[in-house]
Length: 382
Image (cartoon, rainbow, N blue to C red; front, side, top):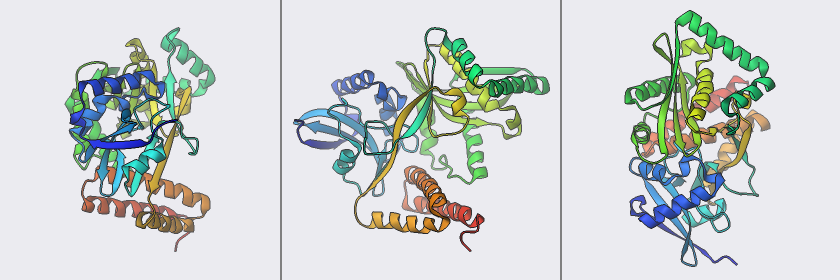
């Protein structure tokens, strides 16, 4: 019978060489932890940049059974570097590491929030993350032939878009593995404009998130790192994507494209070519992350369950959550559920980015205004 769980809260910098080796061994032994976000390198780099970071070390009978790097924002505990962290969970042996609820209980925060928890949680309704798996036999060509057969019209349209773009604007050039800080700044500018256009919270306004992308891209050593893929047409940037990679896993992270070229699908074309070029370099899993954007079904043939959850302790936080749910019910049950989910996700991003109460308050006001506008636009609130 498993012993009682305890937790020590430490600084990431206190990890010993033996503990780093144990962490890495547990990651290597568990396919569910293959994402770059579970690497000790990601946690250590993030801990030097994201405010409020710490490491939870879980033990049973005095033996370490799991590590959970995290950060505090006000009264909340979030995964380390959130919202710049697509996957999270306990790094440890499956049979011994704590569950989501045990983790929240031991950490003791009034609010514990995750959006991509990896681990067996039978009492939770899972969402899905999506991946493209390239088999060693046949490689990219065999994969693409199968996807083109399944979705012929879609891929023919993209091939036609590439030819049209080249005819209209000039030669199409695609490169991956780029580590140019100026290109990264160009991508960040495109993303910030997208956030303004779509009324989403600007996750780069707080500063540390931008620094994290630069630091990850500057990391050298081993098989962990970050880089940019770029599509140029006629010598000008048309699309960019920032990705994180470790081992054979390539995680698509921040895509951006020039809006005036949207009809040519430069972002989709860049993803297609990134898979082709990346597979030539030995990558086999191309991870599109959590979220059900429609285009993913054309590319992805593998799914992984992840849990999105917020665990509140009884009291004021829970009461506020219920009050918000009551307000959103004015939109109707199903629409209210969708808007509530959207508001929670927006708040999670705001809370994670903003390290001051005033910053979180401004972000929350903007998110609430956007949500209420959606409700009012359907005539549900006069």
